[in-house]
Length: 162
Length: 68
Image (cartoon, rainbow over all chains, first blue to last red; front, side):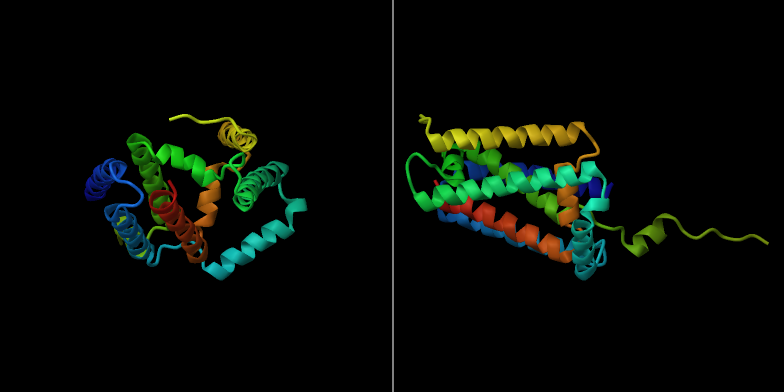
């Protein structure tokens, strides 16, 4: 119940912050402070929410990811195709953005200059800020393991009767 | 606000269309890893989560404080 109320309050606060951010310009000091404060809050929340709840140690995660890449021939085809699709799309986006940035030509706009057309309008800036907040909240909260003491509290060990 | 059609803009439109198509395909055909699964893999450790948080922070600063 308390968790639901906290989540609701965070959604309302996030919506208000995004609406306010929509009224600001990129050069305003308030916009800079708001972004920096949001990043600081996200870092603090990541640490607080993550203590004892991260699914795997970093070394094991790197090892497992490496073994998955090295053993791609034995992996299901759909999984390999899916990962290949994401990598190709990411590489195309980063590569074309880098190409446009290096040429600095009017005919080759960078991704951020295109996004600038959206953030130049208050509604666009506010909506994009809201999307950025949702993405940040996902990075902070997603994929957490349940704490051991929380699990024990939810399902106490069965009492044996003689 | 007017947007001129440039060769680079056309390439961005194609890339954007491919992103939309791929996102829809991965949501529709479950054996393919969807965006949520990719993010879930990334935040599976402190290292991945820290990297994702750093990229997210840089995107925010760049989009809302630096570029027009």
